[in-house]
Amino acid sequence: MSGVAVDPACLEAFQELKLGKKLKYVVFGVSQDKTQIVVYKKSDDSSYESFISDLPETECRWAVYDFEFEKDGGKRNKITFFSWSPDDARIKDKMLFASSKDSLRRSLVGIAAEIQGTDYSEVAHESVLDKVARGN
Image 1 (cartoon, rainbow, N blue to C red):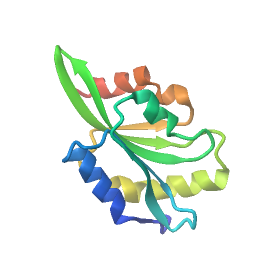
Image 2: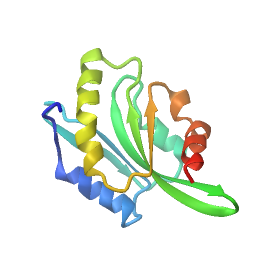
Image 3: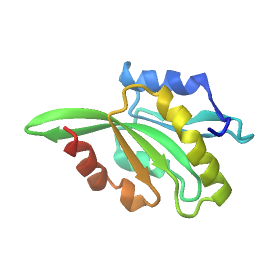
């Protein structure tokens, strides 16, 4: 545990995505003063490319994405948790990020899949689709 608290707005945004189906994804990060996990962005944009573009090249983020796919002729949805820790992020930030993940992850009930990414190939649509669809 890092001592970094989860801002209640994180849970509210997650509920909007999960229950309200108003959002497609939510991006979380550590606040500037490094005391809280906060919402960086909420979006109803269904484009996966837009989601990926909100994961910065040199900064760590967490995200929840309502991943939609087809399997056996039917549409499926899986709420997917992303841990984005790019190779180019600062070591100190990666350490804080890694030690803070569990407090956020535990507070988000209803996650169906989890993806770890250190570069864009690991969060590419095909790669994620393969992991998410396998569990169904």
